[in-house]
Image 1 (cartoon, rainbow, N blue to C red):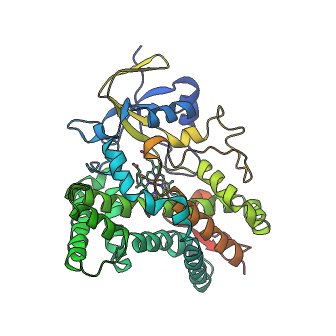
Image 2 (image 1 turned 90 degrees about the vertical axis):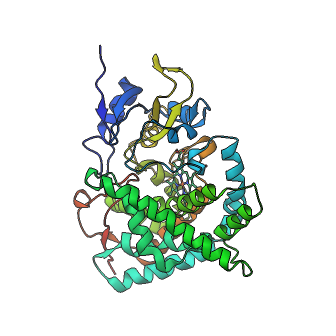
Length: 400
Ligand code: HEM
């Protein structure tokens, strides 16, 4: 019997609750055939253990996603020579260059500053009054300011690189031709920044891009292409995902207002609530792509070398094999091994930074607006059609 090939994103994507198709596949077709927006046929794994296997097993490669003829998930071509498109040992060498900056203890030093920024942004929300858009006033400016500072990118350039990021992640077929131009423009922008840093070499700025430029200057530790890929990757991954998750976290709490009230009364619950919200909210409408480098048999399906496999993080996060009552939001869930930051060698480099941003932005809003509520019914909120799931708007009433 020939298997039905489903189109992904599914028809009922880009809304709050995950498509029921994920649950159906988890039970009945744990390795399913799907067709991506870019027209490639790949396998989709939906169970928790299988998702971990695909993300951590070296038989599934990230380097192979940039090979000629490799299947594609999104409209934009993945950028070669980056953390996300290399396998060990190249990946290990690149990751080492930035791992100190993102190490848990070092990144924790940014917490007081992130908390201060969050409080300032809450002031902006208060000034805007009822109807204030949390996405525009908090969710975007917070991670953008943080990554700009860390990387050494001028905050004044944000409108420009936001536009390129938005297009680069687009899942709208109508924008197909604009996507590549946006990625080229983003690379040219990083190149120009690096040139400016080289021109000011005698006054190093002590930011991450500066450090990477020095690594390239020191010879064989980093090539020009790798430096460009680092710049684009860190700038984009460093704000787009956090921005979407900040909005999703606030919106999910306000969808069931008793959750907001519970956190207002108990700030100590915020770290565990953030883990649960990360599990509960969607990260992407598709899965994380790998390409098999040898034949692999999984649940009776033969995945052939060269074929693509997507690991559906959202589906794994709702797998009853890994979580009790997975469709319930439990802010105090114990032993929450959510996979929203991935797993294995490509585990999110910025996970701890993202946690700080999510926790501190929530705390600032909880302190300032104990009676916050959605200004529009949750079902009417608009979602963006991009690779990383997120709301287009989050209007709230302040209740002050
Ligand atoms: C809530 C926010 C975030 C979420 C949900 C998230 C999620 C993820 C996931 C799922 C991966 C693994 C992708 C894969 O295996 O294919 C990843 C990788 C990555 N993330 Fe994040 N991320 C977030 C925030 C950040 C931030 C703030 C940074 C800051 C620099 C960042 C930088 C990266 C980088 C560089 C990688 C590639 C790591 C590698 O390939 O070794 N992320 N992220």
